[in-house]
Every structure is written in C-alpha cells, then in structure tokens.
Image 1 (cartoon, rainbow, N blue to C red):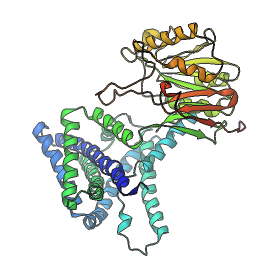
Image 2 (tube, rainbow, N blue to C red):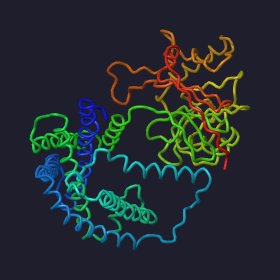
Image 3 (tube, helix red, strand yellow):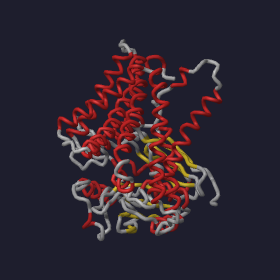
Image 4 (cartoon, helix red, strand yellow):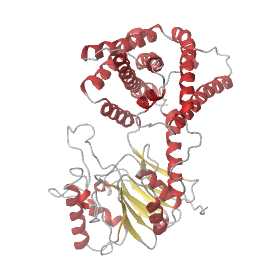
Length: 497
C-alpha cells in the first residue's frame, strides 16, 4: 500500500512499536495481580520482590515466544481448557449473586438512551479496530484451507468469549460495585478460589503477551533489522519489561497506562478528520477527532454547533460525555430550541460550551455538572473561549486550566468586534482570529520542547453556514486561511424521522 520503504515505516510504528506498548500494558496488569497474590500468601511485596515478579512474568512469556508458533499452538490448547474451567467456576459464584430482577433506578429514554447506545457501539467497535497489529496465525495454515473456514472460526472464536465475558460482567454489575471489580469479585468468591482466580488472570495475560511478543519480533525483522527471531523477541521483551518497571516502580500505574494509551492513540490516529453522518433523524457534516462521535458541524435541518471545552471543579467521569452530546444534538435536533431541550434532559457531569445556531436563532449553552446555562448574543455576536461566562459557574471554574489566557483571548476578540466593520461574509471573520506580536494567542502554537500532553496546537479552522447546510474546513490556523485550501461539506437532505 505504501511501497517497500513506506511499509517499513508503517510496520515499525503500527505493528512493532504498538506491540511493545501492549507488552508493557499487559505485563503491568499481570505483575500488579501477582503482587496481590504474593500478599495473600504473606509475602512482603517490597521493591526486590516486585522486580523479581516482573522479570519472572516477562521471562516466562518470552520463553514461549522464542520457541515460536509450534510451541504456542501446542501449549495454548490445554491453557484454553484450564482458563475456561476457571471462568465457569467463577461464573457459577457470580451468577449466584446476580440480581435477575434488576431494574435501573432511572430507565433511560430519549437523549440518555441514544447517548448510551452510541457509546456502547463505539466500545464494541473499538475491540476489533484495536487489533491492527494482532498475531496472524492464518499464515501458517495450508494453502488449500477454506477462506470461509478461516473467517468463520475466527469470528466464532472472538464472538463466543466476548458475549460470555461481557454478559457475565453485566450480570455481576447488578449486585457488585464494579468501580473496583477485582475487590468486588473477591468478596463473592470463596477464599480457596481467589488464588486460583488471580493465577488465571496472570496466566491469561501472559498467554496474550506471548503471541504479541512473537509477532512483534517478526515485525522487527520485516522492517529490515538483521536479527534472528529469537533475538528480536528478546529485544522487544527487554524494552517492554523496562516500560513495565517504569509503570509500576517509578510512576503511578494508572497515570502511566493513561499516558501510554494517549501515546498509542496519537501514533495510530494523530489527527482530526472531517466526517459526514447518515442514519440519524438528521444527517450532519463537520469535524471531529479520532475516537469522538461528534464535535463541530451542521445538520440537514440547518442547525450548527461549535464546541469549546470548559473546566468545572465538579467535573466527573460520569453522565453523558460532551462529545456524545454533540453528536446527539447534530443527529436529532432540528433547531436551537430542540437542542436546548435535549441538553437540559441529559445527565451531564462534564463541562463544555455549545454555540448553537440555526437560520433564525443563535445561543450558547454552557454545560456543567450544575446544569445548562444559556448565553444570548451580545451586540449581534456570540464570542466564547474556554472559560464560563455565566456568573453562577464562574466561582466553580477549575483553576489553572485555561486562565488567564482564555479571558485575555476573549477580550481581544470582543475589542475587535467593537472596532472593526461588520463582516459581510462568514470568511471575513477569519481575520479576527489572527494575533499580532505581543497579543494573546488566539491560535495555539506548541512551544519548542514542550512535554508530551502540553503540545497544544490549532489544527483546523471551521466555518459553519446553517442556511446552506454547509461547513467549510481549513487544515490549519486562521493565519493560513489566505493561501490554504478550504474543504466544503454539505449535510445531505434527510427528512426527520
């Protein structure tokens, strides 16, 4: 697809590097479980014990990977039977505690239901899409193997375990506190079975990693590095083990996992993208980020939505995510009024500002855990940056997030709107977003040498024209608008259902 040299770069990033990251993530999970297991046997888990356990888990995994495909095939069949037996025993205890008559305290409907369905579909889709670098054992099958059989058994092998484990988890959630599933399960399982369960978790994770390490070694050879496969596997394993030790011994484990997953997403899908969406009551077109269902756009009813991120002290990882709400508004609301009704009915636990406009009205809806506040236009304009304008939320602004830069940027825009001529066309507003030297930076430009996670940059400029059901997108900052190329998308005319 990319040519010989281009594919080497592609394999190096999307196969080898991502595989090493997954090695570290899985080994970290297995090692953390091993720490818990050692504590149950009365072993003091100090630094030396942690290092020994991490190296033991990595060493056993790599031994299987070095011996290769034949060993993996021979070993994994009995392992699958043992792990299945452990799963069945655990399922019996969990099902015995499940609440078969469970009903949610507040049944989902309307926006909340659509938001949960959309989030669920995104999670389901993320499973197969995350395995771009998975082990391809079909290459070892005889050349006359039926393609239908390969596809069928692969599908069945993924479908059955996924349904069973997900179903068991859903039933467990009816009776257990799944905020900490490991501790909750230990409260249900008998004491004699808990060590068996923990060992099964460790072994299952190591089995997953053995295939990943085997494939990562082959990927390194495919790039052109002249190493025997055994040595390439050991090299990958050494890097993965070092990353695991950093995650568990130096950094906070969850922070490291979060940062690593951000890095994986950055490497695999580094940019925003335009999109057009059909199949909802209103079709819509616009711009979003990879992994986000919606962000900025205009729909076939002539409703437009701009998005600003905000920070509130009460923000929490619950309720309907703001990006899911953005997609719900664009897909189901036919006017600013309908959009506001939808937002007011949604359970909101995070913050954002939706600037909503149709052919007759423009309003800004500030979302926060305290509800929805509506900001009307001032002097015909609705400027907004990254802080709350509603006085009721101002005292709860999350400190140090965007201030005072956000306030400075807003004052600069407002001063230009007051002093500059009234724009005749939408594109005339682009020049208002350009900063002169010494002025607040209306566009983000990352500082040289900025740490990962602090490299904020303006990647796109967007114009919405609800009257024409049209969105125009420039890949770059407003400073590049004069010489850049605008891409135009139209929301298809789809009747509301």
